[in-house]
Image 1 (cartoon, rainbow, N blue to C red):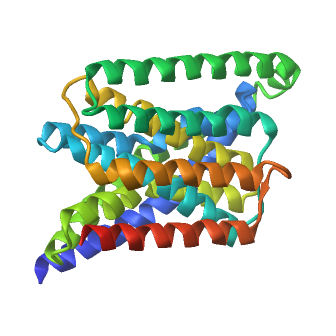
Image 2 (spheres, rainbow, N blue to C red):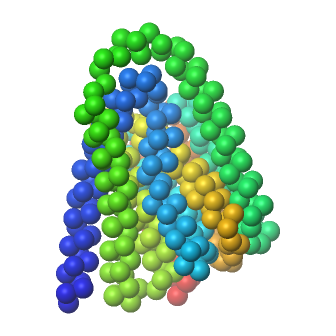
Image 3 (cartoon, rainbow, N blue to C red):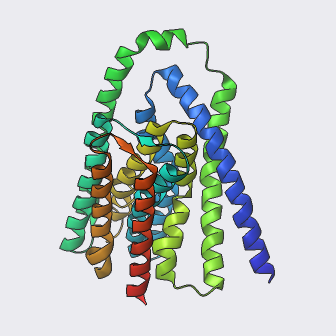
Length: 318
């Protein structure tokens, strides 16, 4: 009884801290971006996406160190499916119309589709090994190079704006950004720990916890940042955070652990999870291809698709 109370207390407190930390993080991140002349799109893809993906990355590393490397693949794929169908769907359903631009779709949306397909290709070949890890990390380096070139072009076009705002960045903004960033990551990890322990006490199968509880839990930071961004009408940051997170999760979240140990692949992940991730990505790109917007109706559709996937996956596992 005491264990239940402690875990529930940790869950609720960490959730409240996570929500507040994400709100502060988004506000101050954008202020720093304006000062440096960085676009919201680039901010979402790099800093926000990489930062909020640390729980997934940490989970993959922990899985390797504890002798369960296959769990890392499940967490990454499950998180990526949830990021698109759940997070973007929820953001579109409860806040504003999620908008983007053609550059973001062509570069980041297509990159998510490519990385998901590459992951499936290596999964079909067998265990994910060191060579696969090197290839995945190399692709991420190339992707970052493209982003840097894009940012250099953006900064050149906004050089005058940067000079005007040179006195607008205070030490308080920097401090709040750092504190909120660490608070966001730490609270997300505590949230995951408490959720997994509660599931264990409730005798929920570990595979279900990994694919859904742990996957959604480690994506809680992305959920809060994305919904917060959308509610503040920073929709480019919302989409960029999710797309960048999915790219980071696959190329780094799986690539780095693969450098240290072979990661076995579950057959059902090849037959169901990875293909669903690719299909969900294609659906998102099709929804946004014409008007570069995701409506509330389309957001609800994504949520329903995730519900069907979760039901079928749990049914097949039992």
